[in-house]
Image 1 (tube, one colour):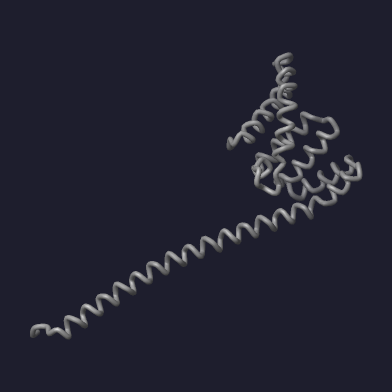
Image 2: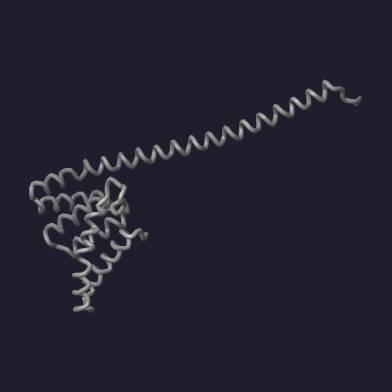
Length: 179
């Protein structure tokens, strides 16, 4: 083990610099790779979301067609059939709420809107293609004072209290509240 000459020292320093450079490249490559994976995952989620929206539009298109033809009873029957096949699907609840509201069955309509928003908050999201925010806001603005007055006249009526609770829930979600 004689002393080290300049060549040995330079070679050792060069190896050390190469090793550190390789380590830096590996670490930065992993960061870039994790960023690429995150971007890929976000794209996959967006594609899946868009596919879901397209599926919902195709699935409920017969209901919308019946509704456009003024056949709300047939549309409700079709919604019942779809609800048996897809019991946790919020879009059917929204459509049922809209149809019932058009028919003047307000309390039941509110219950369907509440179920839909509980299942999927996209219906109160301004930016969602599924958004029914404007319709829900109008429903709350028009019906909350009416149901408040009715509930004050009949405080023992549990159905009125439940509807009022649903309206408050929708109002809270519209204001940005969460579950």
